[in-house]
Image (cartoon, rainbow, N blue to C red):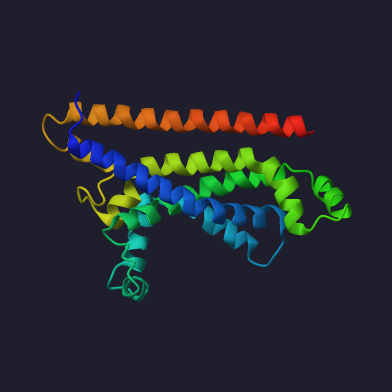
Length: 230
């Protein structure tokens, strides 16, 4: 089992895409999770359904919807291209596909963390004179940090493993959109490519396991700090 230059390029692209997808999605996922956990508003059920829709739709359908919306021929895609942002058949589109597919997992983990926080703790901090932003930063945020980390890791892992929506939206272009899962699929289409596919699959598993272990380590440190403060 050997890894050629194309495999390493696919790994680098996957890590790059997953990193950008995670960094972009985490703040938005946290905001949506907080809205769903703490606020009552018209359309809440619809928002919750839209957030989780990628979990139940076939990934190819999600990729097709993205292609329909963001292709250069579509008004939205043309508008973004006019300001220098091209998504279809570009690595930036792979980032968008990864965000869309991993977003429900991130929101779910963060929402559970927010719902687990006792509102009385926040009310107590508010009665002591803390502003709403101060309550969130000093009380809520430290308590939900393990959930944020869990959501970020889930989103990162989903981005690393995303295939269906990505290949439909941005195709299979070596060096541009060929992420590691797509490279594995490509190797399996070539006679005798099983060894390369197995090596890349092992590499993918190693990266995913490393991300989970890192998340667990960070979550334990955060929990220990919260315990020390209390």
